[in-house]
Length: 242
Image (cartoon, rainbow, N blue to C red; front, side, top):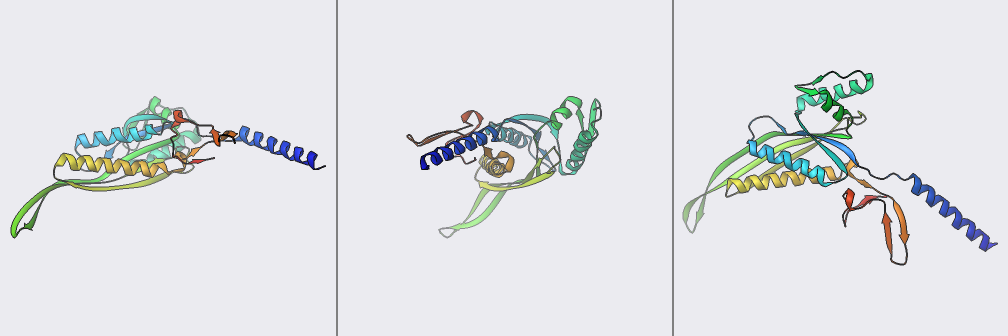
């Protein structure tokens, strides 16, 4: 009797495991649209261009997203109208005109269709930028010495927009302040630190969390085969939802 019961339990576990494997949801490649960096006030053009390129590079590095680089800019005053226009387009399912006006931007029909079909939209912006040469008086061996160094400060935010309309806008604040003897070093350090903050922040957003499934378990070698691999951005040491 015990032998038959054991076989029955094993068969039941096998059926349940097969059902779970067939029904499991795993991460797949989705489209993310990334707007160009918007900024209020003065920001050196080369600094803005480098931040633009690095943000796209960060999103692309996850590998499980098709990154759509947009040539448009969205600032904080136009994001609300952009979201409203997206919602109206989806709710009304109306014919899209050749140009769609949203805030200060006029999108082409093709770009608007790409946006409404995207999984997420990223809208980065710099709200305050400051760089200056600072002189500091100090005393060395009883003598007054003037030291000079560069300070670069960048404040901003990234808006993550769910174009489905279910979540709306999430804002990730950004702040960095770096000091160096040379301006180029201060700028480099500030940009690197800023983009490191971006990566860390979005890595823990729910949509960026990896969801995979177990395909096979090898007890002899103590290994587990999961659904996803390096081709979609999984690396040794990563954490996944199984």
